[in-house]
Length: 175
Image (cartoon, rainbow, N blue to C red; front, side):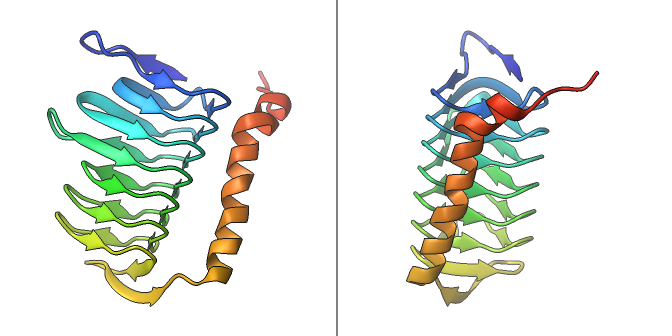
């Protein structure tokens, strides 16, 4: 992984995480325990702060950033799909942000809410807990049910297992 200190601020990465060598983490960033950060992910705490909770997956090619002297906050057990952009927003626990989605400045995504693939959550939007939103701009189309939570709890566990043990034991670079 490529980790940079910036103006005296060093990223803090929790225990049992797996961060790919091709990921970039800069400055005022805190990553909780048992997190996964995929290749190509860029987490920039250069003039803002990024805080990521435990057991969260930041998949490939995501960009996470905050405004100057502000914060991007991501809860526990969050799944951030491939190619997502998160900018100066708040994601509560158990959120799912679908591939290629954008969550913009000052937006808040509630617990167990789902932002569908390619959706755009506009500046200052509030996605209530358990809502499923899609489109540009993101609009509610459904509510998360217990079966959905059960499935996604299983999927989230796969990334925790990858970070904690499987990648460390089984991933071998080929020269």
